[in-house]
Image (cartoon, rainbow, N blue to C red; front, side, top):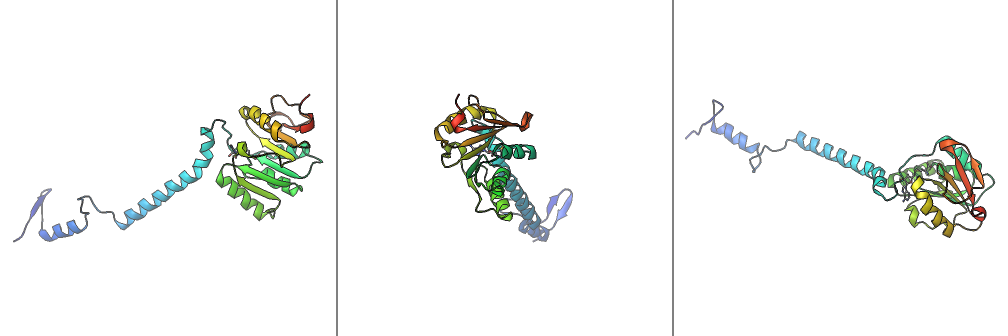
Length: 215
Ligand SMILES: C[S@@+](CC[C@H](N)C(=O)[O-])C[C@H]1O[C@@H](n2cnc3c(N)ncnc32)[C@H](O)[C@@H]1O
């Protein structure tokens, strides 16, 4: 017996009905074609990729002290090393971003380290150091600067934000070694007395000697 179904004014034969059913899922909804699977997979992968890359850059905005990734300009880097003229030994850049200060320090003979929360920036810095042949002189750690002990470092560099300078001053007051210096870029410490000031405006850097920070 032939079963015919009336649909939109046309007669559909039972053989058409068999074809229709095999192209549809059991739930009654249309089944995904191969192209549909590919499009779904590619858009899912794109969404996950953007999410994974963007999240570490957006997370600082949610922290109590927001310290976003703003790389030092060429002038700021030059001013940091003018202030550090004559210094040597260990150096740490706290919040090392893409590693430019640490790698420049390694080139100038420092045993340089960077601590940075953003994993992408840590990997990028390690890769840059490797490409430029400074893997032993420039090392990078994914670490919170507030949980990093500063006492092994004779030279500390911070390119910070205004609201972090007071708590950081207190932390460094407890941890900086007796012959240590700190170079602050862009924002000075609130109560310490700088020994050296280089540059002007947003490029200003202040160097503080442990032995001279209190009047
Ligand atoms: C203003 S950027 C400075 C980058 C680099 N020092 C430079 O001069 O080019 C500050 C960096 O600190 C990182 N950061 C923010 N909070 C941090 C934390 N608690 N511990 C370590 N790094 C942090 C950010 O991801 C950002 O890369």
